[in-house]
Image 1 (tube, rainbow, N blue to C red):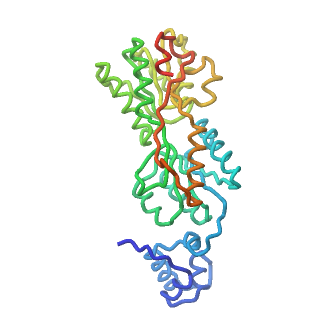
Image 2 (image 1 turned 90 degrees about the vertical axis):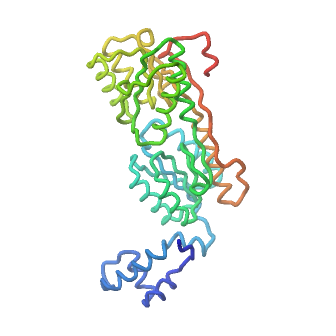
Image 3 (image 1 turned 180 degrees about the vertical axis):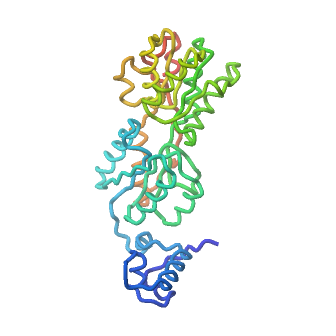
Length: 346
C-alpha cells in the first residue's frame, strides 16, 4: 500500500537515528561529512517514504511561489509558441511567472523535468505532451502539484483538468474532404508515431477510408519527424519510388510545407496535380506560398482556457467542466482545389 503520510527532515532524521544536518547533506549530495553506510540508510528511508523535500514543505508552509511550470516537447516547433503565449498572457495578468521546459519528445527527460518542477516548488504544471506514461503521471499525483494537460486527456486520477483537439475527427474530416473531391490514393505522412496524437490522426485517416469503401494501404503511409526537412525527404522518396498518389495529408503543417517544397522542386503543380493538407494551422501555414490548407484548432484559446483552469485549481475555486475535447475545423487555402461544399468543413 502506498504511504501517503507527509514527513519532515526532522522525522527522517529521527527514523534514521542521525541529525537533521546529516539528512540535509545526503539530500543535497554533499561531498563530505557522511559515511557511505549512513548515506545508504538515509537514502533507503527517503525512498521508502516517497520523500521529496520541497513538495512536502508545501504541505507545511502554504505560501506560494507564484510560478507555473510549462513542459512542451520542443519550443522551437512552430506549433508551441502560440500555446506558450496564450498561457503566459493569462498568467501574467494573475501575477504568475512561467517556467518553460523542453522535453525533446523524450519521456524520460519529461519525467525528470516534472520532478525538477516539484523541487522548484511551482504552484502547478501545464503539460503539453503526447509521450507521458500514464503510470508515471499516476505516481506524480502523490506530490500534490496541480497538473493540467494540453493536447491529450486522461481520467481524473492523472490530471486535474485537460483540453485537447479531437485528432481523430480532425484527421477524418481532412481525409474525407480529399476523398470526396475524387482522390483515391492519399498518402499519409506522420511524424513521431509513438505520440498519442499521431495514433489518433492515423485512426481518423483509416476511418475515412473505410467510410468511402477504400482499403487501407500501409505502403501509402510514412513517418519520421515533425520538420520541414523530413517533409521534403518524404516527397522526394515518393517520387523516386514512382508511388502513384493524387493527394497527401500530413500530421503537421511543418511536414506539409516540406512536402510541398519537394513537390514544387520536382515540377509538380499544386493543387492541380496533387492536393496537400496539413494539420495544426500554425501561423506559417497562412503566409507560406501556396497558402496551406490544414486542420485548425484554436490553440491560443485552448491554452488560455487551461491557464484559467490551473489558477482556479490552485486558488481552490470551482473549475466546472474540467476535461474538454474541441472539434477541429478545416482551414481551406491554396493547396486544395475549391469545392462547392467547402463551407461544410470550415
